Every structure is written in C-alpha cells, then in structure tokens.
Image (cartoon, rainbow, N blue to C red; front, side):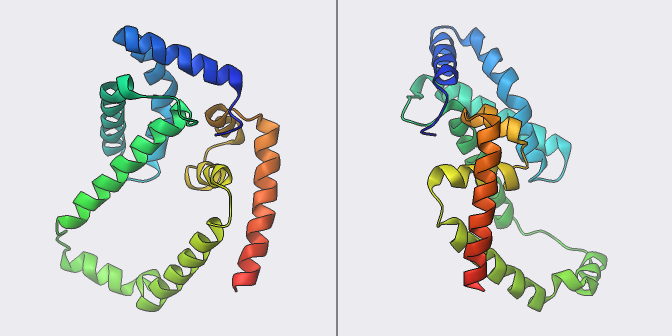
Length: 189
C-alpha cells in the first residue's frame, strides 16, 4: 500500500535481502506470516488439516519465488496473501471439476433446507452483485482494508501490522468506509 510505514518496509526489505543471500533466514518470514495465512484458510475451507496443507503450499511457493520478489509498491504481506488467494482459487477450481457424489440423505437435507431454495439463491446472488458493485467504488487500498476486516476477519491491530498503517488510522478509515458503503448500498436499492 502507498502509506506503508517506511520502517516496516525497511525491515521487510532487509529480511528479503537476508533470505536471498541465505535461505536459513526464511524461518523468520515463516514464523511471522504462517499464523495469518493459516487463519485465512481456516475461514475458507473445511478442516484444519486442509488449511494447514494449503498454508504449507503457500510457503513452498513463497520459498521458491522469493528470489524473484521485487519491491513494486506492494508489501511482502500483500504478495504472500496474493499467493494464498490464488492457491485457494485454484483449489476450488480443481474441486469443482471433480464431481461430488451426494448421498440421497444429503440431497434430502438440501431440498428441505429453506436457505438452499432457488429463490433464496437468487436473492443471495442479487445481494452479492450489489455488494460487489459497491465495493468497486472504493480505491484499491480501501478495498484491501475491507477485505482484511470483513473477509479475513482480522483485527485492526493485525491489519495495521499487514499494511503499516497506524491502528487508529485503520479504525478511522474503516469507520468512514462503512458509512460510504452504507450510502452506496442505499442508492442501489
């Protein structure tokens, strides 16, 4: 992000240089970011083991690509989460290609579940589209804040650590973003 704290950026740049010279320093990066990446996957997949496997795969990719990492206005954490997001997308894409076999009991439960109705799905799709359209109204850095807070469910302190913004600044910006989002959604309805 543009407002990334200079001190944090210097720290990350220093760590990257160390890792590029000696891969044994990778453990410091792993220790800092693995819990955050694991939390990301735990909220998006079923099963702790799968979340750990995907997190490990992210760090394998990071380890292999770290020599190619270049500072281009994107923080190290944003780069790592982009890898995680792409891996998750690939995981679900592959999973959707494999036909899931549903038992008759599961099918019966789905049909009985009012949340699984066609009407319910249509309403949810319309609401998702409206929300997506509203989110496109925000600057990219605000979209990241929204993503971290509401989709990653990170605390303001964790967001502060990822972005380099002061924790109070994160809270203030999120407050303003919520108000703006509320107004945008009112006009869409």
